[in-house]
Length: 249
Image (cartoon, rainbow, N blue to C red; front, top):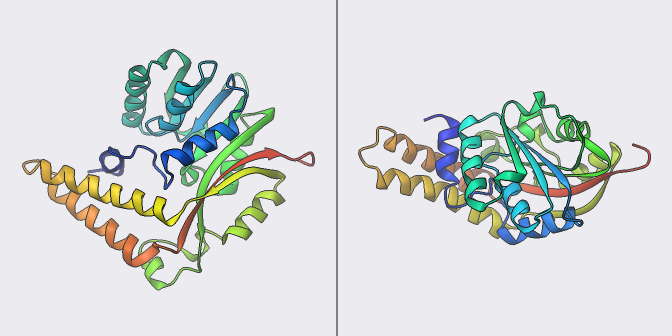
């Protein structure tokens, strides 16, 4: 099983691919989309969950989603049709770093997709290139709640991969961005996300005993659960923040 297939199964019961509750997602979208007639872009949209939720509640909204995973884009298109919003959203299966559009966007989203651009600050630079003059960015990425110990590093992280929360925000503001609203994922949101990720993948394997990838799915779920519980639980945090350009920028 490749990474995309595993992710698609693991997020089957919890389609927001980040440690955020449905209520947190609603509040973040409400804060970032005050008019309801914005044009929005999601860089690394996955199965389009953020865009579809935004569109369902705002009939004047128009959206574009970009993701390198063609299978995720196919699921996004199917979900948009089922939600009755397919006429207001266009999805592109391509590398988000190569995407261009003939117009700018009122809001650019990129939540949990900073790896596609090489980190948080490069993600903001990429988003800025698509942003209308008075537009905003809604970005989500990790930070260290506590300095990572050896167990966290053994789980596949690098100590320099993230900064603490204060330093992360300082680096954002130093680049000419003003935080308008932010949300730090709670321990409950993290736990719900990880239990769902590992549990959904495990359940799929147990419900498909004849599938050739069943044993691998169980192994991946167990390894992920171990990395979380023994490695980064309580150490890795997640910040989702709505930003606007400052005058200096």
